[in-house]
Image (cartoon, rainbow, N blue to C red):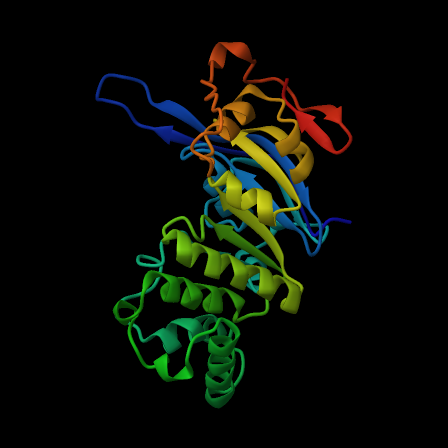
Length: 292
């Protein structure tokens, strides 16, 4: 049984228009389904506005979905009461994109990391502080920094603080929502290495949301490609990169920069008329599906 199963997930936003015009519906997530196995690093990729971050937030019910099912260890998270959902959040955590806005600037970083333990009423004060020190060690931060404020840290260090906060409750699933996209490339590599080390050490499962396909290719076992609220291609990473099938995937892959300046490049422009947006996913090879 997969750790997480998303079935026919839908999230529509109603956008109000002017005084005399009708509201319009934005189909941010439009009938999305996928599974993530325990211990897997599953990639969800697409351009900004494709619906991937909304999908991650709907899984955790930070945004309430319009319809669908989210099964975590076989139970539908969307049917949980608010009290049950609070308990479930121990097992499912998120690392946000922006390490600058996701940390409260008025709180010391030790208190930020301790906050989930306080919310869930876990441990005595001394036990919580010991856990915070342990988490700082885990993410490679000096314990001497515990009493400092977020503005005293670099972007990479702030993201490590965000990761420590996400790990405070020993979750099984971590949603990394563009967790390295706001960082410099050299710092990105360090944070990705940390995520992979933590995955091995703590037996974590990741939903890794990103728009950087090069990164996804190297760290994810399977990947789903989102376009305008729908998954248009899904498969094992090596198969999908070796044989992209959907026009959108081909266009995305053609845009990846190459290191060799003399290598021949053929940038593929996406023609929306070349495919049906409502086409269902069909198998195109073993463990490889595309909406063609």
